[in-house]
Image (cartoon, rainbow, N blue to C red; front, side, top):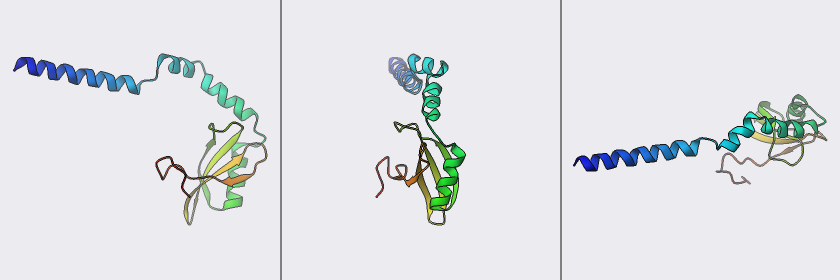
Length: 119
């Protein structure tokens, strides 16, 4: 009986240690973040923008209406771009704003459908 409890406790400890290990960044990721490599990449992308985040918000609100509730640099794009979430009387809408031209376009909402485009 004691052997079973010891085995059960050991298994629980191994599972917990594995879960903690998965949640922790790798040493390389942590070092990159500490060395500012993520920030350097984002700054490099942002330096290519001809408009500011504030101007991107203004352009999105002007073209689509509503009020911005969230805005950020869209670091998933190859060139400078901003993503602005607007709240309108029809609900929320995500707008992509080109960082060079300042042109806002409706972006597919990927959050409401498990990461798939909503059409």
